[in-house]
Length: 601
DNA sequence: GTGTCAAGCGCG
DNA sequence: AAAGCGCGCTTGACAC
Picture 1 (cartoon, rainbow, N blue to C red):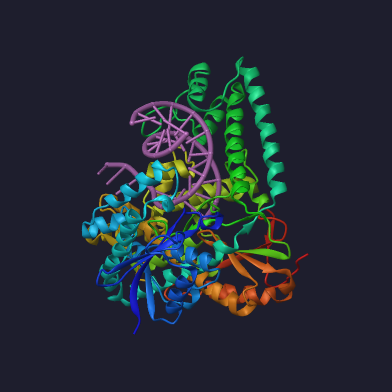
Picture 2 (picture 1 turned 120 degrees about the vertical axis):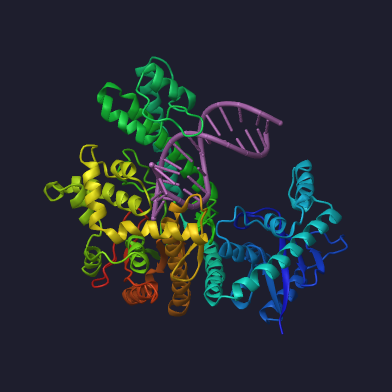
């Protein structure tokens, strides 16, 4: 019989891949009996050694003890780093953070102390006390006196076991929720391995790019000074003055909170259209903004990289309300692309990321997954728009019919216009499905006022199920407070904003699909390549996989097997599809990877 | 100096 | 009546 025991680590900070270390741990059993151990200070009463910890962890592997953690990925990483060996794969464990995320996705906080306060009225004052010491000593938790720290540690372990006793029975009561929970636990372990491996940048490329941009920023500022007649910062308050007083441009939009005239990119682009060459300062502002932002981000990549140029990000496998993953330190889910529609001065930041020596990177993404999931849920809730399903069968473009409706002359446009229009219409399609009103749809699709109402009506009539889904889901939110994914996961939304339902449902389902795909791919790669090919990153609908060049002759087979596993979801009543690209030089230059003919230089 | 908020922007 | 959504990071402004 295994014993449940809350387990909480104390560390010098949160950046475990950049030097922070575990210095203590605490436990608490179901009776509330808490114990604390200090690794760093052997003069303390509750001292413990690395051997003690190792022996304790042996009991996990032997399944004598099942540790319960709040954000297990963190505690397990800290413990593994301290012991210098992997343990997560060998143990059973629980995670009260994930339990909370699953049971109430829209809870305002899933922090340990907040939950214990909300659910059990356990006061949070111990945190403030410890923080006082930390602040006074300008140091980390290891500087807090033993007695204070002991109380604090014991408190967290107690909170953790209480949360487990409260949450877990609710999860266990529903087989689908249990399955969702187990999937999340597995994802946490897979994610640990991704963070550990990290992703490599080419620091020389990065530095060169930064200095290039810095030179260009100088030039822009010089040019602006000449035009304006004095040095200007091209940002902040001075920018508002420059645009709306010095140049007296019309105020097209105001910021929502403070009501200042907006200087957003989209507004500047509109102003460009209106005044054109008469105001050369607009382009300078856009360049300046993009490039200063770009250099800052690129510099942060350099700062995060280790001695070998590898970045180990912090990935939260369930960081968003919708169950999506989030990524920080740095955020590798928003690395700028060099070619983006509607961005005149992009930063080619993806050039900086490279495959490790001896590897290529495969990028496998779900194609059109949001659209496909929308159609799946239409089938469940609002019916079947035959036109759209036919396109799915023929593997065509689901946004094409809307292009023809919003722009009847669509077919006669040239290629590049078609591309621009399609992007706009695609966004309008999503906006519409996700509950946007006619005004917003017209603006997104770029329709002039005189034709918009009529064409939007035609669009609504053409896809009754697609357009009608939002209404059904809204009603569900109002009636019961939640909607449910194909996996049985409940997605709660505020009844004041029921229109969020469609977006939440689709985004949550896509997140679950990706995480399950990730688990399955990880397992497969372990077995099929002995862990030589590995997942490096996941970005909402995409997996980045590094693959050893020595195994390239097998790659076609392996990627094909992977692809099948990624789309294997019998409960989803529409076929899913993945596209594969391969990058040999950097993230920017990836080319289609055709499973029929494989040639990699 | 440190922390917080708003604006803005990158990705999906 | 009207309503797309989710993140993290940087800058600039302001308060403590």
